[in-house]
Image 1: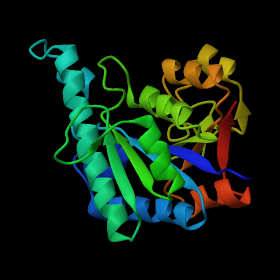
Image 2: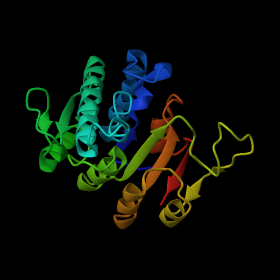
Image 3: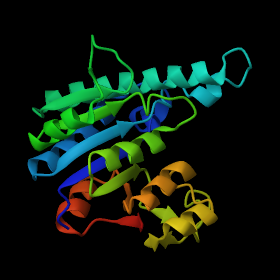
Image 4: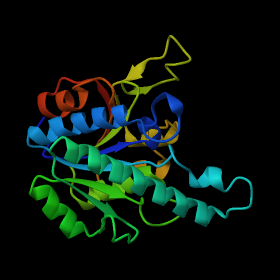
Length: 236
């Protein structure tokens, strides 16, 4: 309850639907609608989207032809594509939004300047952060936590297709149990893949709670942040 500013992180694969590649515009519009509901209720929203629906740096570099550094930059460009798509979807619903990129691509988006990002948020604009941290070898999970800390977010939302963190894969095991609350140290020690270890460690150092929730349960984000009645796991 009482969250004023949040950072929502979701994967690029979430945009691709059943195809596993590219952008499903119906899903894009659905997610934009969920974000709009937060804005309409006075919550300031930053967004980080992965790029796995287009290309992953690690995967691109597996064959040995593309170097990992170049592969990661390709992945960063993929996140900018997704960020621009989300900007279009939000604007289609009447939401004021800006894309800020850690790489300079001045023709289509602003360069990331944290004071400008905060000013946008204060004016009620959604800010979509693209291109990760701008550095290879860092994931968009780490970028999301970094941006959340920089903008002074109250919480980071790891939006997924499951209700929260489970002791085992709920898609494979019927007896999987959802963990309502776990500590940063437990997540790191047990290698619970909430986010990558670098992201969790950064959240721990800055006492930034992580809510893991189902983005595809309509209204769940708003219920969590505004009415304290949604379903999620919390890492703190």
